[in-house]
Length: 107
Length: 121
Image 1 (tube, rainbow over the protein chains, first blue to last red):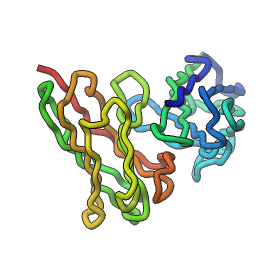
Image 2: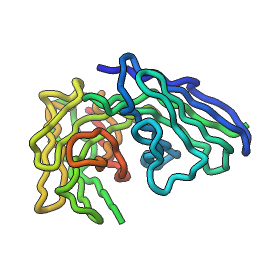
Image 3: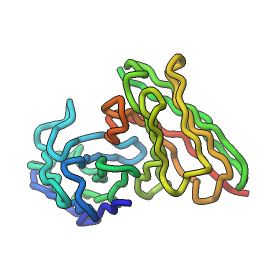
């Protein structure tokens, strides 16, 4: 199975900050990488798919990059509603594994 | 509006069975693959199983292979997960999720609110 490792596990930031979360796959997943946002008590929400494609309705301050084994999710200017947990997930092969999550907290 | 509504969760003893259902609406159900993803409260996400639009391709996580069976009824726009030989470690919130494609792309663009399964004696 492909292992997905996110860093950091948690990060504190302020409104307006630029934040980057990284995700590394234990083997290459080409561009088959997605990012999800999950708020407490809610289902995950797809933000980015195919490493850099923005899901419909997602604000343009979210962006993704990378291919192969190394990927990043960037939020260009944090908004209050962005404080949540973020997960990467590989869709290159089954089983479709997730990273352990990165919790973005208010500083 | 896409809606996915899970049901069938509850408290069950180890070794027993449970069947989860997911009622879909707001999209052409038989055009898309569907999945089950679970989450232990306060923990991360784990993909459990997926099924292509015509049930021709099915996959399972190693942790449930041989115990869980995914199925769908396109006429009823419904997804199911038959869970047998349940274990304490199967305790989780089970989400139904829609794929972005009819094959098993493994990209989950819509999710239900989940149904809680608790396995305990």
